[in-house]
Amino acid sequence: MKRFLPVLLLLLVACKQKDYNADLLVKNAVVYTVDDKFSTADAFVVTAGKIVAVGRADSLQEKYNARQVLDAGGKPVYPGFIDAHAHFYEYGLGLQEAALEGTKSWQEVVDSVQSFAAKNPEGWIVGRGWDQNKWKVKEFPNKAKLDSLFPARPVILSRIDGHAVMVNQAALNLAGVKPGQTIIGGKIETINGKLTGLMIDNAEGIITRKIPPPTEPVTQKAFIEAQQNCFAVGLTTVDDCGLPYTMVNTIAQLQHKGALKMRMYVMLSDNADNYDYLFKRGAYKTPSLNVRAFKVYADGALGSRGACLLKPYADQKNWSGFLLSQQKHYEEVAQKIAAHGFQMCTHAIGDSANRVILKVYASVLKGKNDKRWRIEHSQIVAPEDVKLFGEYSVIPSVQPTHATSDMNWAGTRLGKQRLKSGYAYKQLLDQNGWMPLGTDFPVENINPMYTFYAAVERKDLKGLPEGGFQMENAISRKEALQGMTIWAAKANFEEKEKGSIEPGKFADFVILDDDIMKANGSALPKIKVLKTFINGEQVYAKK
Image (cartoon, rainbow, N blue to C red; front, side, top):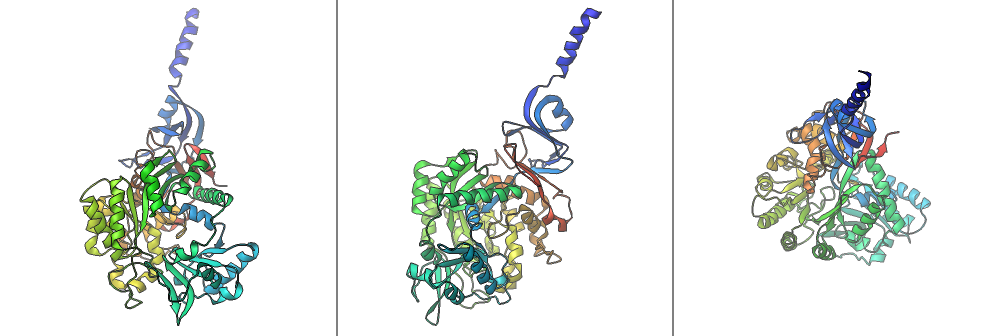
């Protein structure tokens, strides 16, 4: 019997040997896979940056020999969050400019600019984030104080939505702007024959073209700092809406060096050079970078009265806003984008702009399709036009925090009746059965928890209004999570590689300190990210 003992021991050891090696096992978690069944699990396995198995920890531990084991401590785990509409690079640049968000008056803006200028004594003074709708006096400012403080140094200060700027006389002089000058799709404000410094929509370009382009160190710093902040709130993919083709190589190089780990879906701006670039070379696709879409602007923003409305603004008679280009331009652009097989993503805020773009899309798409052409914002849509999203498979790409940011003043612009057809996310979602969510940062905060909260609770961070804003258009928690993950991936043609925790997909995931699917509504915006992973690599950990 003794001589058979070694053989038996070898057989027992062989029976216990693991079938596979793996890089990471995540266990003791509440894993929201966001798969087709919206199933949950308590563990998953990662190898070579991808998820290879999802299920129960005991069975996975028997099968896999993991080099690293992460005990999630019973915390919830979700697919990495995707922001379907953002301005990632612009946000990064803004971190190096005068921060004007949250200012409560024009004087406070001027004070902030003075402080910034003292610390940055050379070159243009650039700032962003003021919003006159948040001030006690809700009127556009003028340049008088800027002229007094900076008679020779050019200043440009962007409104929070980026659709209006306030500039001083030094900037106007450099750009050669004269009183009475006009521009299609924009406004150069003149009162009593004098320039006020307010430039809206296309008029901004007259000034911005005179600003020297950022240096390479500034550009790289913008991407890296933006990435750090985004990882801290659980973002693993961002859609950067409206970049020049020259930025593609910069992003690719940073990603190749490993400095930029954020995955990016880039929409190139509506520009002849950008069309030539992509039409000639075709879509650019790597695991971290996808360039196959164009960002087009139909109109401006509601806050600056640049949104194009079917009827005049309730607070400005005989003014309905404007399209930023002739309708013929959108028709021609749509035809050539379709002919080359790319995606068209058009900014449309007002009900007139949405109608124009929906009809342009309809003329090209012809009916149901899988082109996934998007209308970015889809903010104010006439009730009779909502059905067009479904009839032509047009994707409404919306930002829930816009509703809760605008709700206190949007009715003043639109009137009560027209406001009812604004920010109608549930109606829009019902058209195709899915809808991507984003923030439009830096217009709104980068935090996906705020997106989730605004989508399901329809309240601001003060918890107002008590009953929620137009709650008939709130969406469910399941739908909100899908909008921030799998549906956002689908809007980018990437649902087979990300957006859910399933075998074969990138191991992009986040661990939160509380469960957004179960927490009290008031607690949602306070939930924090504990860890963020891309390709199974930890890129952020809460300190």
